[in-house]
Length: 212
Image (cartoon, rainbow, N blue to C red; front, side, top):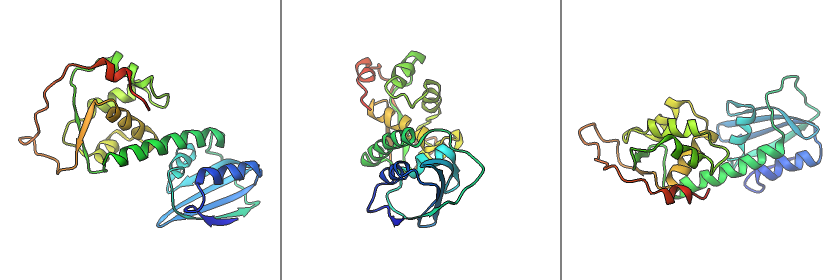
């Protein structure tokens, strides 16, 4: 089958391949980005999504909302780089899309600069926060928060930490929704112009009331 992702959600498309137990290759073109997934009996076996391989690539694909797709039946590969079943990946992908939409709706851009609102978070605070979202590891949350310097753009911060979209998006969404960070879309200030952020007393109720 051939089609357009503007008319059918990619999650539904992947589930239809699973239900039909299709074997073959799906190609998806979104402008200059190209995705290729090989299926065996409906389950993805090998994926390359705009250069992102495997499970992580499929999670990236699940955020696509446009693109032309076509399916070539009976095309196979011997390699495997997809570990999780498609149903699990779709669930994770839908959750990721919700968080991507959240940070877009609040006005966050790749050039935005995150600003910490608290300087005295403890390790236990990160544990409590991470417990609200099973996709987030406390150590990653802590490492990301401590890397925020109030002057580095999000894209540069993510690149320096070598994080995938499925890693950094949940972290940023959680920090924003728990009111632990804010952001600016102005130009990155120089060291002398760095805004003064006064340390605040941690409001434990905000941490415990995070809803993701």
